[in-house]
Length: 64
Image (tube, rainbow, N blue to C red; front, side):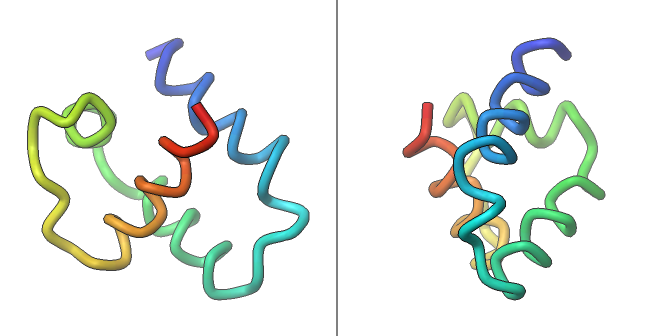
């Protein structure tokens, strides 16, 4: 999904360089999720129950 790619790329461009090792690991773990799942989270159609994923999803949405 192009829109999803744009969100994730924005994170990489704006945040990755200043992210600590833990945040980087959370982002990498997020990439292991299915695109459809990610899209539902980013659109707010489904709650993110995992605290690790919730934190990085919130961070990415703040950049949008």
